[in-house]
Image (tube, rainbow, N blue to C red; front, side, top):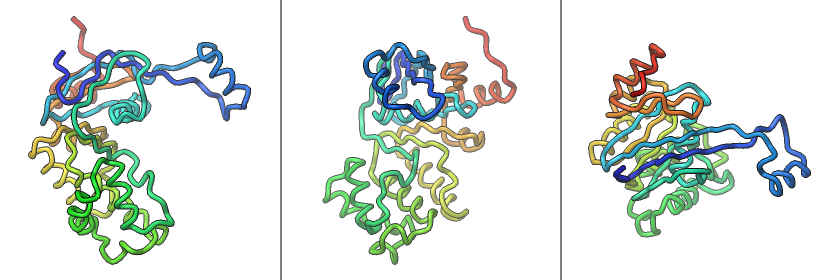
Length: 247
């Protein structure tokens, strides 16, 4: 399999079952005897490869493994089995605003977040005006983040992520960012990034959005691949809950 810009090759990820908050003795047991605690497979033998400029939609019910797949693509999690290959800078629109500090100003949070996404100080300085203008919060940049509304925080986080010039953009149900006008601008920006040749992996329950942004789709159920192929064909099969016969 050509690894391309992003690929999963037989990737499996498991997590320990927990009935509630773990006691200290449970944590020690996990460290000393990791095989004793029951585990569930969040992803099981997932394989796909994306070439530069390709877009992939993730289809499936809540708990199917879509968010786990995206988090693993960022490098936040390591697979238990298989291999993940990433070639290029990654920007993730997963939990927008995660890592922002309420006591720091908008400008300070912008610089820190941009640095975490791989921008140098000079690159951040060159893009700050565009980031602030797109987010629509210029008069608040010297105010602490705790004075922002939740929508303002999300708009700033989104604007930083889409201005880092990443090669791969990972998106997890973030289209509800801000008001209707900003949502339209966000969609236009993502469409422009796609036309510029960026690779996009999108998890959404919006069939229209996935059809407009993704050439291919991956249908996940309980961590397993049920179908990988043309977006419309996968969405139609998912809607009908028709699993294609395996050859």
